[in-house]
Length: 277
Image (cartoon, rainbow, N blue to C red):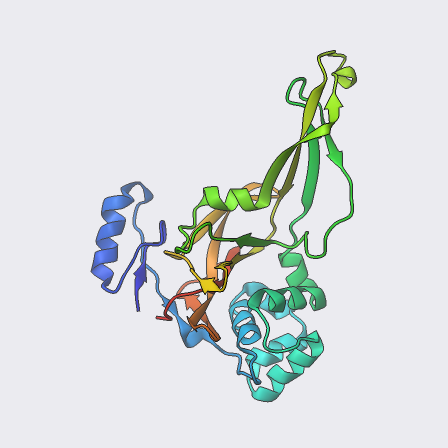
């Protein structure tokens, strides 16, 4: 078991070391209480190779909104058994084994509350950097594009240092369209033909899922698990706090790790490849 700093994710087996770190490195934050991640929160039994689905549902069961989940989902953790898990697998139409991301997508597809929690409207806008004209663009959406799922992929075969800056690159992308130019006519500000900038971005809802990618077939994982992150929300910028992580103690098995304290707005990290505490 390790004690984690709620600000930066620093972790140490001795609580006093983490407390000292919090006081010295984050004095402006006031009194900080370290938290631990425990795998004792797994309340969903396995039905064959269902560990990904079982871990995902175990985490979701700790959310306040779980009372509005479909009865088949709730039974898997309220009356945990191989049979209730198997019923859920069949209801979702999943083929096992599967990845945690596939499991959450299936749950969002079949359950209205989970889908609402994961709603993340995507917008694409075209802008001229010269006169500032800005217009929203409409086009076909990709399946799952409006779900609050962020994929973070490593650039090297090393553990990822997750930061808000790295996250920003995953939900906001921009590129120059050399084929569509602006001459300022819309704003009555005539200027030389200027290529336009297209920006694709998301705003998130009440829940966010972060998927940690691999380097080829090599799992790299995170250097540390952050307790909270900042993301664009419908009302501006929101702080999302950790509700759980799907941890892979071996290359072929995952479990749910739950922090001691939970709150409403959360982000969930899938496939954090590190030894389970």
